[in-house]
Amino acid sequence: MRRRAAILAAWAALCGSAGGQDSGAPGAGAGTATVTGVVKWKGPKPETQPLTQVLGHAFCKEACGGKAPPDERWVFGKNGDDETLRNVLVYVSGGLEGRTFEVPQEPVVLDQVACVYTPHVVSVMAGQTLEIRNSDATLHNVMCSPRNNRAFNDGMPVKGMTLRKVFKNPELKIDLRCFLHPWMVAYVHVLEHPFHAVTGADGTFTIRGLPPGEYEISVLHETNSVKAEPAAARVKVGAGETRRVEFVYRLAQGQ
Ligand SMILES: [Cu+2]
Image (tube, rainbow, N blue to C red):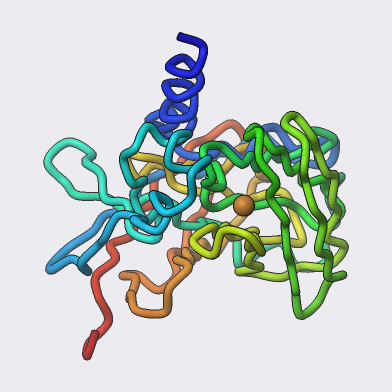
């Protein structure tokens, strides 16, 4: 019974809530403007295969209930009649130059549940804590070799164990991998400000607490095989206002 509850909890964590990772409430110096929206998908989709390797590992097979988990590189959802893409970073890529913001005190949590990183993609501000948890009663070993931050390689042998890591410098697409389970991969995007979010199951995102201004908003998927339209959106937002932006991803030509 307990095992069943753990599996259900794991799947609930994997499936997550409908909305995307919220940018939260940045600290002092930030404003009251909001940029929200959706990342849609158009056209043919890449083929996706479940992570069947998981079933070759006794603990992981049992932990995932004998059903291979999905490859979260491509997670398509729905928003009304539109198809959407999950796990896309949406961030302010212009309009904040020369400004500094407080680092959010709340850590961003990245768990290891049933031998899968949960969530698959997170974003943090440089200097913010990333808390890596192990909810599995098996050894995971978290390897990270960034280009612009300190590398680490830490074993997490005990269920409930946590590691607290801080990436000091902005860097996109840092991958975390597990030495023992080659299918395990997660992406950490480190931004120089707190205005970023990751799309949820319905493709939505919300970036809160922006100062009033004119911004460029960009999107980033972990693969290079997609093309966004627009490549970057321009948005002007006043204090207390909310503006919507929409991106459409499709496979890049030749993919
Ligand atoms: Cu592992």
